[in-house]
Length: 59
Image (cartoon, rainbow, N blue to C red; front, side, top):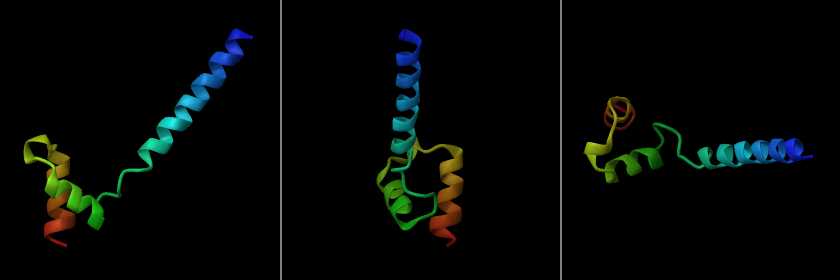
C-alpha cells in the first residue's frame, strides 16, 4: 500500500510541475520580450540573449 501512495504522489507531483511550466510565455512572444526587457541582463543566458536578438530586435 505504501508503494501505491508513493507512486500516486510522484505522478501528481510530475503533473503539478508540468502545469507550472505551462505558465511561462512562449519564446519570442510579445509578453516574453517584455519580460526579458524587465529582467536584468546579467541574469540572461547566452541562449536568452540570442533569442531576444532574433525575436525582439530583428523581428
